[in-house]
Length: 391
Image 1: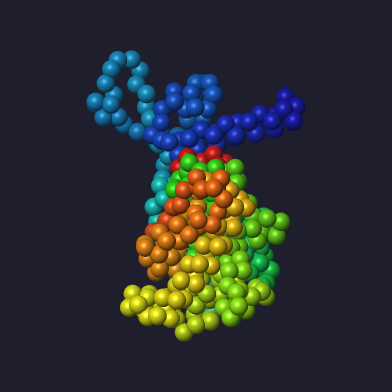
Image 2 (image 1 turned 60 degrees about the horizontal axis):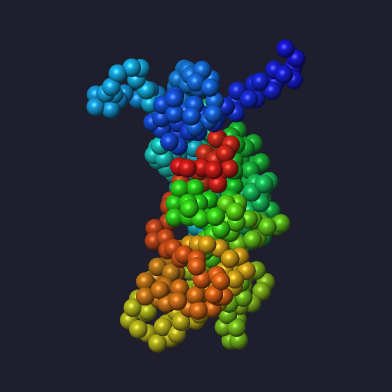
C-alpha cells in the first residue's frame, strides 16, 4: 500500500472513531446498532471501533435491567462514555481573580483552585497567578496525560485564533501571547475565548438558544458584552470586536462620560458595575438598596440605563434581525423583573414591525465560568463545530 493510501486510511479511521465516540458521549447509553444507523457506518466498522474504545477504557458497556433486556434474540448492549477517559481544565480570568477547575466527561468538578488579587501589576504578575492555578490543578491529577487541554475564559478582548489577549481586565490594551506562553510552560493545548462568546456557544449547544439559528446574547455585568450568532456561526469580526455592545453610544449630553475605549457616552460608563463604580458613588449593592427605597436620583439613573439599553438593543435587532435575544447579568438582576418587562416593551415599540416576531429570554443564573472554559477543550477534543453538538 502506498504511503498516501495508508495515510488516507488512517485519517478515515480516526474520523470514524471520533464520530462514534462523540455520539456515545452526547447520546449514550447507545447501542452498536443505533451507532451504525446514526453514523451510516457498517455494523462491522462500528463493532471494531467499539472494541478499540473498550480496550482503551474510553467507553463502558452498560448492563440493562431485566425489564429493559426483555424479549428474545441477541441483546443490544448500550455503550456509555467513561467519565475519566480524559479531563479538561477550565480557567476564568476576571478583574480581581483567576479561578480554575478540573472537569471529567460527565461535567463533574474534580478539583478547583483560585488566586485573588486587587489588581494585576503587569503581564508577569498575571502569568505568575495563572501558572499557580494551573500547577495546583495539575498536581491533583494522578495522570496528567489524561488532561486534554486548558480552556480560558476572559472578561476582555481576545484573538481566539492565535490565543492572544488583546485587552485584559486591569491591564488595558496589551497583546499577550497567552496560548504560546502557557503551552510552553505546561505542555498542554490552550484555547482562549471571550466570556460572553463562550456563554453564547454554550447556550446554542445545549441551552436556551438551542433551537435558534440567529441570536444575540447581551450581558450587563462588571462590563457589558455581547455575542452574535448568525446561521449557527459565532461572528467575531475582523479584529474580534463584533459584539462589543458596551461601546454603543447610549448616553448623550451631560451623561456622555468618557470611556476607557477613548470614546464618550458608551453604555459601559453607566450601565455596568465597573462603570457605575468609576463614574458614580454607587456599588451594585448600594444601587440596589437605594432603588428599592425609591431614592429619586437612583430611580432616575435606572430610567436612563433602561432608556439607553432599549435604544441600543432595538438598533441591534433592526440591523441583525435575530430570532432570539438572550439577556443576562447582575445589572439586569438589580433592576428587577418589572423594569426588565418594561425594557422588552420599549424595545418592541422601537423596532420595525417585521422584526417583532423574535423571542426575549432572560438567564437568571449564569453557568460557572470555569465550566464554560472547559467546554472549549471538549469542543476541540471532538473536533466538531458547536452548531452540530447535541449535548
